[in-house]
Structures are given as structure tokens and as C-alpha cells.
Length: 185
Image 1: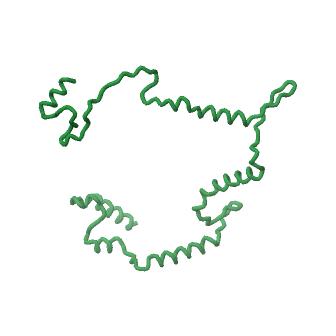
Image 2 (image 1 turned 90 degrees about the vertical axis):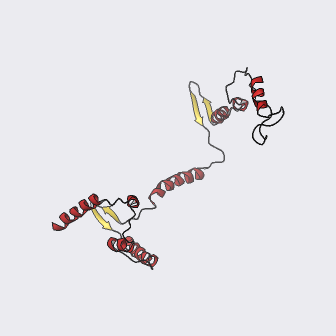
Image 3 (image 1 turned 180 degrees about the vertical axis):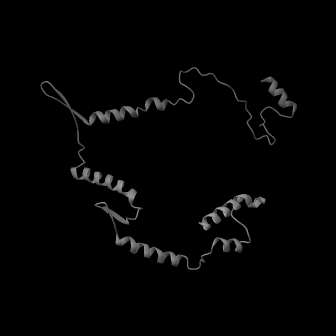
């Protein structure tokens, strides 16, 4: 402790001043303390006294009724007083509807009946409605081919390597070759 005090005084520090350029830091040294109790680091006495597991066990034990017959002991689960048969049925229906929620995003287009597929008319109507909405949404949008879009953008692409002068000539040549082979057949 004396060594540190001498070092600080060498640089103009006085006893009671704070540390740092503006002397706003701590003014008392950090002292170590010894720990003699048996609990670990970060031990909280509340954790020892909070017996949540005992409460859960007691609640579970209260929900079981023990009936003693002449030679047998029977354990019967007690029903909750406030829960009626209707409430249990509602819970079951809610679970079933939750399972069906998974399929709400799908559109039913056909049914398989006796090994044959039957088309459903509702889908065709919905499909036409979708096309009408799509046309309205694309009111000011012009449909362009890839070549037209490339020409309008001045030859720029969305390829990240293009910023650095990479043109992927070999890849483009392979694709062009594949297209020529495909078109010749």
C-alpha cells in the first residue's frame, strides 16, 4: 500500500484526492476481504428460503385423494371445483383448432376422391381475383425483360463483385453455351 501511495504522490496526487486526470475517480483504495461462510460466490440467502418446489409438491399432493378399501389403497385425482365438463370440452376444442391453424395459409385446389383428383371451383375464382388485384397493384409498373432492364441500368448488375471489376466472363460463357445447346435440340 505504501509503494502505491509513494508512486501516486510522485505524480502530484495528495491523500483524499480522487484518481484520474480530473481527480474525479475513487479516493479510497479497494480493500480485499476474507470470506469465512460456507456459501459460494453469488450465493443469495433468498434462494435457500424460496422453496418453490415444495409449493408445487404440496399442490400436487392436494390434488390426489387417497381411498382405502379393505385390502386396497386407491389414488384418485381430484377434479377442480371451478372446472366443469363444458370447460374441459372447450379446452379440447381450442387445442384442436390450434392444430388446424397450421393449415390456414394453404389454398385448397382439389380433393382426392376414389383415386381421382377433383378440382374445386372456388380456387379458380380466387385466382382471378388475385390477378385483378395484382394488375391494380402493378398499375405504374412496366414489365421488362432482363435484357431491357440491363440496358436501362447502363450495364450495372446486382452482382457484388461487379463493383470491383469482376465480370464473371467464364460463367456467362458457360451459361450461353448451355442455352445454345438447349435451343438447338
